[in-house]
Image 1 (cartoon, rainbow, N blue to C red):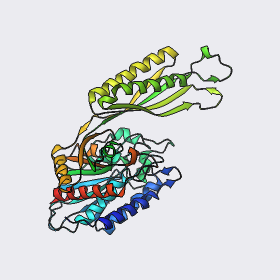
Image 2: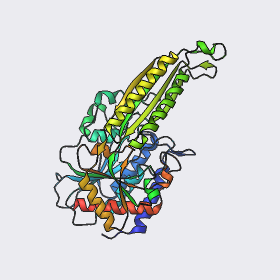
Image 3: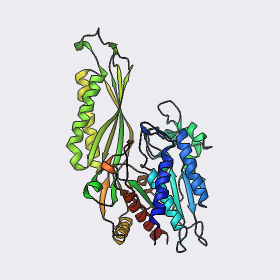
Image 4: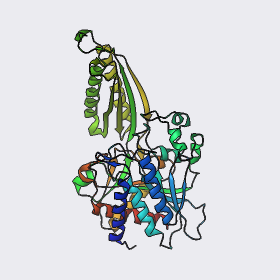
Length: 415
């Protein structure tokens, strides 16, 4: 295959900049799932897909699917699927998710001209990959993989009390129908996602391409500490039930437990802390905190969870502040397809690009698709490993390398 490097790369860079305009502010890019900026970005990509001559439709959860079916190929032939997401965390960057979407479109623009294809190729924009708005990650890809929890999802609301069900209605969708987003058996031959690494392994090793063997599991907790509000000046220290003091001890405990397990590929982080009533002269009477636990081995996740529970129990007793722990999500590590990874490795060698097998501690839509089809995750270096941040940056030469590998991989799988 021959690549028009400069033309393809210039188009990709232009699209990344264009998509960054939807939700850009002085803090970065804020394009929460199903928000007005997300709708703008989604419509922009739909227009690109239509201009490419793809068959475009939106499924019952809001995933956008652009499909190219080669001439003479049955519509029932399993599709080679690629794609990523457009939604961001608050004050996020330009490349997370977007790079995979735009490079997938660029790859398909090239592949459409090849006559050897024997499988349809689909580019998917997965809805609501980030958990920033509704606290559950990869909503769109989970629905596509048949991993829906309809009763739970019907109740999902964001911090402003807006329901996921209401946001879906803005797209003409109803939560009662989201189970129909599940793909029929054998409709997907395989799935390949291109993404930024969100770490420094590739950059530090000066490696062009990362091929992910395993994606860490995510367990997310909500811990609520109950105390007694009181006057910050009038209440004696020894008489207080200060929920924030207990919460602070829990934050330190989580960090210390995480240190013990990091060498085993696991980590734990307190990500959100909310105090109530949140008044400058009142002792906090309640604190809510969210804990993110990730690991490559299920046994270590379970051990971390138990150690956190034990530490929380001891702190609650010592400071007389009752604590409740709710498990919001609990997933298992996902092993990706080794045969597919070997193929990608061979393609990297053919293209004279260096590659490295590695594990990912960041979650992706690939985790969902791996439940229903052989799946692979290809990652490219990002500067200083920074992501979920306005400083997120991927050098053009790394984008070009990722595009070449993705295009060659899709071509090999679809011919």
